[in-house]
Image (cartoon, rainbow over all chains, first blue to last red; front, side, top):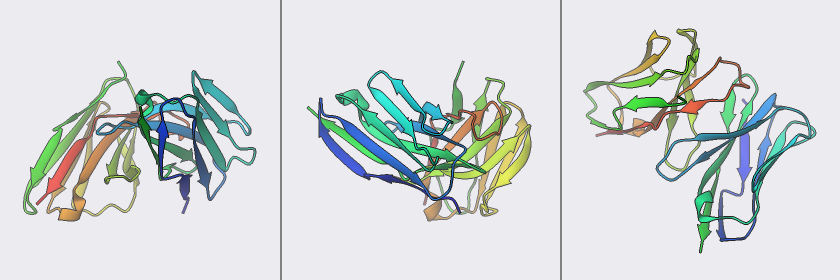
Length: 108
Length: 114
């Protein structure tokens, strides 16, 4: 079945440093969605990418969808303590499959 | 209103108990989902309801029984659970069941099976 892997599994950064998480699917995706889950919380939708090579920005967050529609990345510029949480990509195909997640910790 | 509500927030039950989890949304969404999430793992899809009919069952054991009484409500009936079923159970809804639709998650029910 479809597998969606994310690296790294964990990332500790100092506040102000940049952060990137990478998402790779075993199959071509119809779309990719990104969710953020704060500690003790539930997944919250961030953005969706549909087109090959698409790039979208939300303030300090930049999302990319690969040309082959099998990978994606999320880049956060100048992290803040409010960015703490686990970031999941979720690939659409015959169903929405969540990636393994990247847990981000931000230290002052 | 983009809120999905779930009750109870926490539930502790024995292996012989019968309990139900409830989920409600008033966004007019026609697709509703149950996910199971273990600690430090991604949500795993369990069931999908589309227009109040069960459309996907991800080979979930029969001790979990979903029900969709109407377009706003989704229940998950639990019976004879095992300790390994302890997890966060998340409900979600989306406009339709197409996989390009944004899913809105509820806060979850944290279930402990003793």
